[in-house]
Image (cartoon, rainbow, N blue to C red):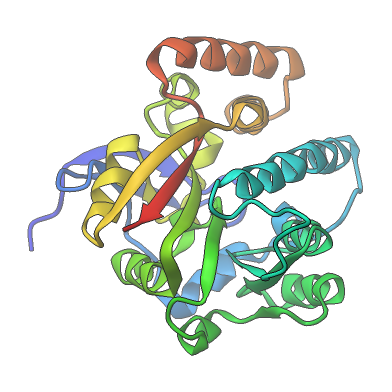
Length: 291
């Protein structure tokens, strides 16, 4: 099979120091990390104390700031899933609303949803993160092989917060998520956008490429085409404006060897400002409806 056109060469800045290519997939308008590590070797690229979504650590100012912003983001995520008109919770509705969070990390979003009357389940491959998550959710978080044990049409909402880009079997996972949603259920996917201003500015230093942990790099066209193959439709998109600042801060570190708060803030601000016209935000949330 012929290799796809090369888009960019990118280094794994956080763990291995290895170099990977990003190749362009014309069918779906996304970039693929090449070569992709085999599934049995992929876990080694997550073995870092700095992989922040697998820990509740607050060892330094950067991690404290991350958790502060995460607290704000959690409230926004809860507001989003409660806003779906046919799923809105009220005192007059006694039926449980079922949520599955895939790649739930240490379980903070599940805990917030559980405390607000959602019946929650989670999937988390990392054992240490899963143990922490289960202390917050009454053992409602499972390894990834549990995805196939859920009954079809079990969930009102399935969320993937910066997770889809990590999944090796992309199309088969989309098919699984579609099968697990109830009719008119929502699939909520948040992913980086390689067509954003900050991605173009930082190029191979853009932290959201995060190779090889990120196997796929999406555009808005990518997500629409991908879910359409499973008869689903992107209902709306929403920006994740904080991500432009966070990603720019890490990108500054990769590019210059240290974090430059003022430069990162400037690039993040410019990215969000330009995105008001182009709608190409650093990261985007896609609200996808099952027909």
